[in-house]
Every structure is written in structure tokens, then in C-alpha cells.
Image (cartoon, rainbow, N blue to C red; front, side, top):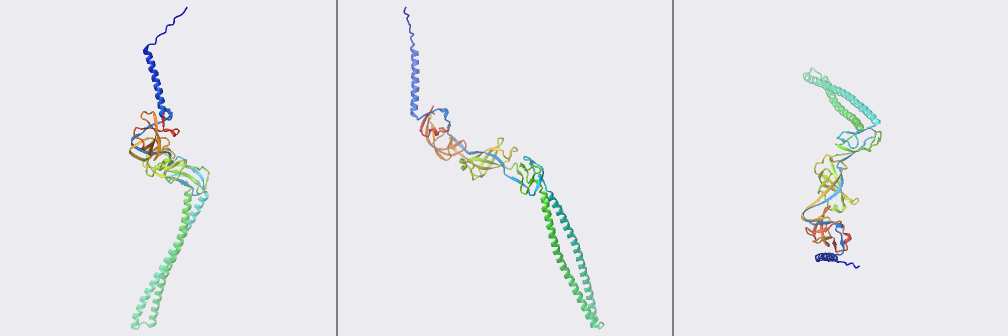
Length: 416
């Protein structure tokens, strides 16, 4: 028996919809193929990074990591030999000027001090005794002068009296001459005594100067040994924090050995490592913002190291404001050096490998964002993340800032 198959008739509307869909699909494929024909290659949009050119005030800065270091460091060293008898402080302790750091022991030096004290006391006693003898000698000489003057004055009176009597004949000429001779003798004796006093005073002055020199020598020796004994107690030379204390009790210390390293806690500078390619924009005096993670502190570039080490240059930053209490030596910080402020500038996120003050080829996106075409661009000053555009781009233009080295041989490519 034959079975009749009934064919269902497709509505005309459905056929139209299907036809339109097919046409649209073919149109999309043809449009895509046409776009591909306009470019050298096709790139996935997720593989590139796009940035837009902006217009306005542009801040040029350079960043670098570093640490805080003391601006005023003091190394304490031993000025005498000794054995560490006591460590008064440890690394990290705060000390004031004059506070003891380490106490050394040197029995030989202490004995030398005692001997010097005895010798100086003997010199002082010798000087006192000599001065007493001198005073006695001076008094005796002064008495001798006084007696000689009195004898001379009496002889003058006697001579004058005999001279008057001589006129009347009451005194012989012989007695008169004898009185005159006696007067002259007493005068010479008086003058001689005065001259002896002058000579004695000069002699005593010379003796006193010699004794004073010996006494001063003994005093100086005593002071030197006393200072050496005092130096057995090593003291801080400033208000500071102890950074290093390498000694242990019982250790023998020689003259010149390091005792401790001190630093003024709030007299710090920042040492920043700046990349070599950016250092040419840095000059002394530029403003710096130092970030300690807890605070931001303002400073100025005070020194730029002339050497390059591992691709970086060391830059010293002196702070221009009071440091907070939480800063300390060796604290890790980040620094931003403010190079310049450029008003009314065009700038964009810094493309990879873009150099300041250079001409380079960048890929600019079309208005619809589907094509990237190579353009020549002149760049100006650059900061860490942005760079100035001098020519070749305008505000609102979009460029690729990711790595485009694989597109160097292409002029234009499609982004889908």
C-alpha cells in the first residue's frame, strides 16, 4: 500500500528572515575581509595597551628607591689600650653627649698616674722650699742695704760736722780727711749692697723660671696621663643613637680600635638610587618628596654622585622640614624628584622604551579604534609614568603604549 508524504510549506516570512541573516553574515565576513585587506596584520585588542593624549599642566618627576642614612656619623675609637671592663650601652640605645659607652681597664696606666702625681707633688714641695729660702736671702740683703744706708748717712753727718770745725781749727786736717774717706767707703758699701740685691733678684728669677718649667713639665705629664686614664671611660660626643657596638666584655682593645658608631637620629638624609637614563634631568636644588610609608617629607637634592653603579646613580636628599619621630637610620623610602612643571602641555602615558627628548615612531589608533598606524612623534621631558608630546599627536589621540617591537616592520595593522 503506498503512503502519501505531505510536504509542509515554509512560510514566505521565515524565508525572508533566513535570507537576511545569510546576507548579513556574508556582509560581515566581506567587511572583515575588506578591513583585513586594509592592514598588514590583525592583532587581538587584549594584546595591546592603549593610552590617550591629554592636555594641561604636566609635572615632570623622577622616582627612585633608597634609604635614610645619618648625615652626622661619629666613630668612637680607643685612644688608649685596655680591656673592656663594662659595656654600658648596646646598639639601638639613645645616648646624650657625655654619657659613658664603654669602660676599659688598664692597671699599668693607673700606676703611671699615681707616680706622676707623686712626682708633681715633690716638684711643688721643692718649689715652695726654694721660694722660702729665696725670700729669706732677699730679706737679709735688704737689711744689709738698710744698714749700709744708715752707716753712710751717719758718715755724711760726721763729715759735715768736721768740715765746719775744720774752719775754726778745732779739728785737724787728718781727722777731716779720715771722715771724708769713711763717708766715701760707706757710700760705696751702700751702692754695692744695692747692686747685690739687683743681681740676687735676677738670679732668683732665673732659678724660679727653671723650677717653674720643671713644674709645668710635670703638670703637663700629669695632665696627659690623667687624660689617658679618663679616656678609659669612652663617652658619647653628641646626642645620638648607637648604630654599632662590636665589643664584648673582656676583649682587649688597642689604640685606634673602633669602639662604637653613633649617629644623630634626627639628622638624616635620604640616599636615592636614580636610573642612569633619567639622571641627566636631575640637578642640585630640585624639590623632592620622600615617602616613608607613614609620612611624606619634603627635601632638596644636595649631591649627585659622579659614578654609576649597577645602572643607577646615588642622589643625596637633604630634608627641609622637621623629621617625624618614627624615622630612623636604614629606613627604606621612595623618593620623587620634581624636575619641572610645564603648563599647557600635551602628554601621554609613557610608551615602553620611549626616551625623553627624542624622536620615535608610535602607533596611533584610528578614530574608530580599529586600526593602528605608525606615526613619527617628537617627545619632550618625561617622568616615570608619563612623557611630554611636542609634535605628532594632539589631545584625544590614542596610541599604543605597550611593547610594539614585533610590529616594527609594519606600517598599519588591524585591532579586533
